[in-house]
Length: 521
Ligand SMILES: [Zn+2]
Image (cartoon, rainbow, N blue to C red; front, side, top):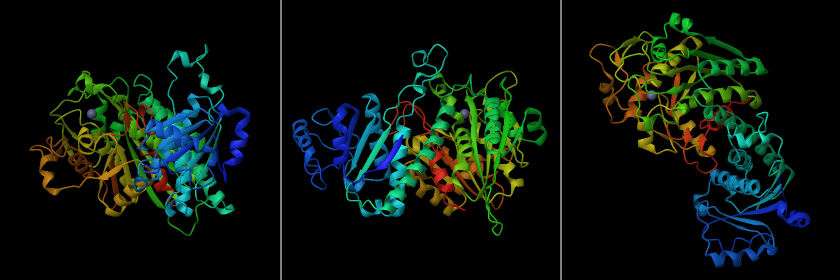
């Protein structure tokens, strides 16, 4: 897909005349401006739209839209009230426009964005707006159809690979923005940035959507090895024996009940052109990688076991970032770490009441084998001690309690460093990946105490997302700043929302790439 800034839409309109159905004009409209949005700018030829909207009594509420085929193929899209507008409104709008073009086989779209507040047109704002636009299109058009016979030819190759692509060109007209050389350059950089972050998120979605009979721990390890080969980064992989030998017993306890052996994955990215004068920051990204979570002997009820292929979402996010990080020229050493295993209940499985000793020497009483993610993360966090990292960010589909607390679209953020937490949350406000802080509370520590071990792996039912985070804190190396993101809600969507089709969402990929991108050469 090509994205271009366009100065006036007259040229696009006269070009579209040769094949009207091949070109859609998409107007974003604020609620309250349904009868006036064509006033600013030169849109006289589109005034037929008013009549139609009036007839339909159209209100431009969030995501509401009308498609008009004649005299000019036009999509009218509700952006809600102007004071509610943010970058994510653009993502949803462009996703809707791109999907309309795809369904209706139109190769070109001309998007008209109503006049925005000045902050969206200054350099950084324009960059983020442009990035949101290309992300909206690329993320919104994502599909995972490889297992549907109708979508493949006789050789199993996806038909869409050879099909013509709809849309091919997206022209963007920012109403009220002066189209200068500088602005075009900034917007082009933003479009390009958004294409890269969206490709990374779509890569994560691809792996999340693969079922447990395809993606197991070895698969993730092979994928990591492939990524390291492509990018020339270091990759260490520990097999079952090495995991036991190193003393990762909290992790190994979870893996024991599965036929598919665990793998511990460690990828290391180092910038090629780092300036010698500076000591560069080291960041570890840890992703929970349970390739399927049955709950173990504390077996999940059937209804809660479906979609548990998505319990590897944190790992997929980390792999996607490691695969694409070379395209962002960040001046950072980044470690991608995944303790990958399956949580299954066979004769060798870990029992409730078992006691395991984690890599950092702490002993854990197992109260519930379904609280397994924190056990694998305990050893992954402890492992970073020898790497001497400055910051650790972990992503995990960790607790149902987080979904109860914040709903299914928002991740819970916790940790030991206020600045890091607020930086991640303010970055998420640009990417539209909703995140909110949950407070640690020393009064709750008691819930994790065990009469016979250093701690147990679950608290009671209250504040379960927080006690899970506080459990992890016990394994964070001293001095490291740490941020934990519980993505249990938004990692996977059964219904689809905004620009996230049903399935894995790739949550966290874009927020962390934007965050890492703050550390430039
Ligand atoms: Zn579980």
